[in-house]
Length: 186
Image (cartoon, rainbow, N blue to C red; front, side, top):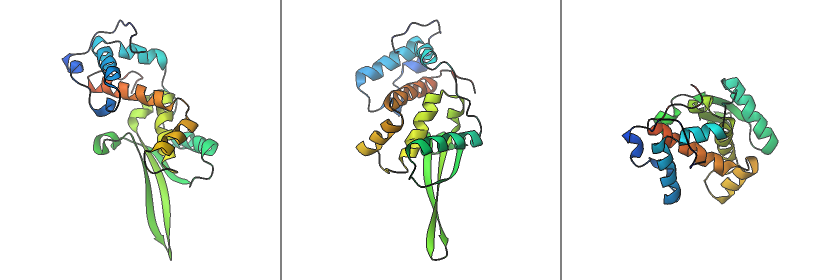
């Protein structure tokens, strides 16, 4: 994917500077490949070829149904979700692409916990693989709180290509941060 040829014009000089934390933790050689593809303008075409179109999940109701279908297929005994929605302030304020929260309220003599998942609106116009990756990630937090081995095994159980989707999403976010245009609409 990284070495694909392109007809797209190279990005401005901002693309040549080191990518932000989106690619932190990956081997330097892989990071340099992504940075070179961004600078040459080939990353956008490679991502468009791999993920030709955006998904159809546009509303909060459709997102709720999508999340519930994945939850029913893989996490039947997990606690119910009270709310699932897109959040347009998420990426800017919390520097996160998705959140899972549990709000506890006193109900008589006991606590009642309601769980909710919020997904950044960036995923409204993204390929289904990217949406699936972030939803799987947030659903896995219903069972495993920390990002440890068990967490990522659960993610892989729900989405076998989880790591590839995550890497491609991070490459896309680095591309956007370098000044690239949205590839799948707005």
